[in-house]
Image (cartoon, rainbow, N blue to C red; front, side, top):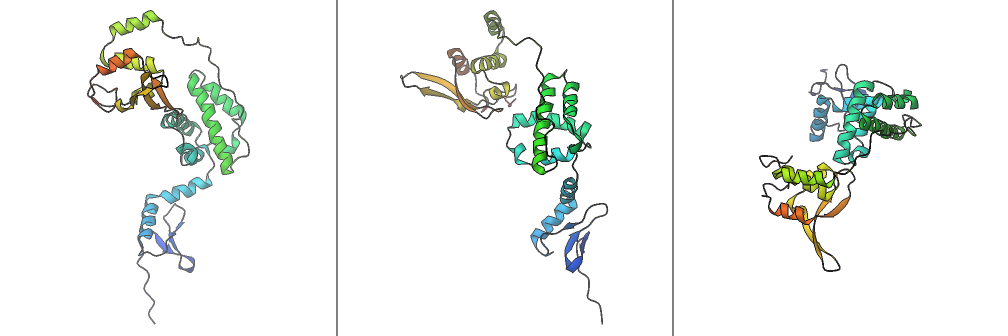
Length: 267
């Protein structure tokens, strides 16, 4: 009696116990297909992901509990997705450094003294040192949620306090000196930052359509700008001084954004 012909399965696909289909490639963990019918499109989508190594990487990460795996897990979480782009950019700088230096260190081996040591090692970069503490604290909270650790070694670690003199506002004579010297975009950036009091990225994001007047209860109308702060997510309407309104009215619109580079591109 002739033996039945074997299935013509794609490369690396095998039938194991009870005919269940798995993807198995040398040096990688085997992956069970959710769709067990090789003729279905869903099967081929899974197969493509397996060829790219996506499920294998996730399986390996699930068994690792080092700093690199924790960072990868955090980046995929809603905690990270819900922060603003500006905050994410600051966090990323710290996480890149953590992966480079401490990527293979076990999360459960970290102690409070290690966080303090890292903070103090970066004290010359005051802002970065404090961000290290803040980001590590968030990462370890995520590790607690994952069940990797039971306490946060960064909890209670104080931030560095600056010893430099506080920043003071420009005196009037320097403001007037700049106004009489600067022209074009340099003057417009200066006046917009001075008038709105917002962070530079918020000022660069302002568009012409964000400018609108509001009539108050006493009948007085003021012109201001609508914005959503990148860092805080707060929605604000900031009134503009008359000198800035005059400057804006004399500025040629080259783009949807108010501030552009030389060739009318967004900064």
